Image (tube, rainbow, N blue to C red; front, side, top):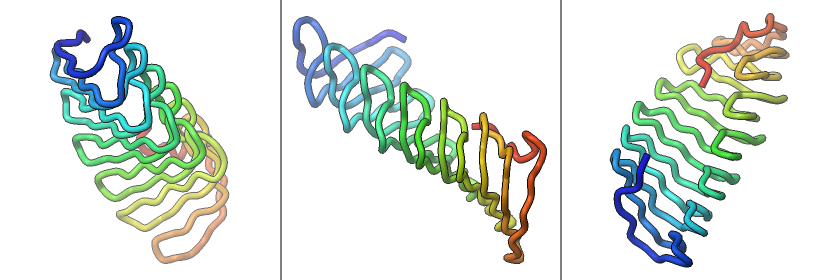
Length: 164
C-alpha cells in the first residue's frame, strides 16, 4: 500500500508530529501522531478502505497499547489491549453484532488464557473458563438460559464459536 498524500509536520525527512494525516492510494487513512515516519502515539485513528476503524494507541507503526478500539463495518467491536498489531492482553472485550460477548484474555489475536467468559445473546448461556488459541478448552462452569449453573469440561475445541 502506497502513500498518496501526507498533511503534517516533517522532521529529518520523515512524518513527525502530533497531528498528521496520511492518505493511502486505496482510500485508507490515518489521522494522528507520527514519530520518525511511523504512526506512533496514544490517540491515532486508522480508517480502513473497507470501512473498519481503529481508534487508539500506536507504537512504531503498529496498533499497540492498553486501550484500543476496533469497529468492524458489520457491527462487531473489540475494546482492549493490543500488542504488535494484534489483540493481546488480559482484559479485552469482543462484542458481536448479534449481541454475543467474549470478555477475557487474548494472545496473538486469539482468545487465550484463564478466566475468559463467553455469553451467547440468543440463549443467555454463559461459559467461563480457560481458552487456548481461540477455543474454550477447560470451561469449568456455565450458566444456562434458565439461570442454572453447571460444571463442565468439554473436549478441546468444542467451544470454539467463531474464531476471530
